[in-house]
Image 1 (cartoon, helix red, strand yellow):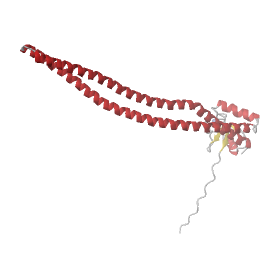
Image 2 (tube, protein in one colour; image 1 turned 135 degrees about the horizontal axis):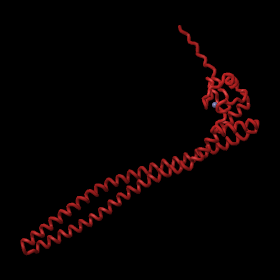
Image 3 (cartoon, protein in one colour; image 1 turned 120 degrees about the horizontal axis):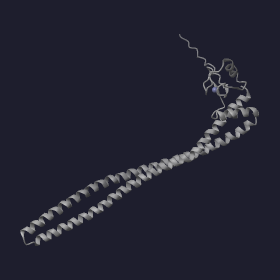
Image 4 (cartoon, helix red, strand yellow; image 1 turned 120 degrees about the vertical axis):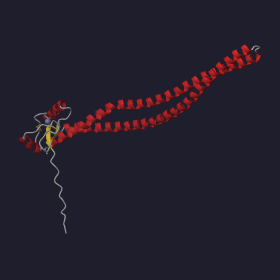
Length: 248
Ligand SMILES: [Zn+2]
């Protein structure tokens, strides 16, 4: 293969590495923010579950006050009933007592409901706290992984940039200009292989036979007629020799 073609292939690999690294570095803050958002969501779930229990306890306290109120009313009626003179008064108070007992029963039923709800809410808090602990562990590990990925990508980018600069020193200026012009026009891919059946591997146009013939020799700079990318050829690997088997 011509040294220039080989250098352009290497240049393309370095540029792709640099591009990938840039994308990874650019995406880093968002990935950190996403991890933090997950953690925040888990914290909010715990807060919401705790708030639910707090609301439940407040409602419960209000119901306890109602119980005291109805019990007070009930014992007052009973005292009054013990002191009445007429049958009519006695019956009237009996009616009041019945109503107060019904109301007390209703409140006690609501207290029972709140107690069962409190059990469910306590389980929910536990679940949310367990999920939060898992998420904290997860996010911590992810941030660690992200940090080490960032460091290695930054190192790869520095290395590729240095090698790129050295490579540019070995390439003809006109060739660099051609490469960069095509790269700019073609989403960063300036050089690609011609397939074994004679197509440009990126734009898939069929190459003219005599052009394909030249590309297969890998010793000159030939561009795809359609996408202008510089083309080279990967010869197929030599056929693997089948071991000779002897049949008795
Ligand atoms: Zn093409």
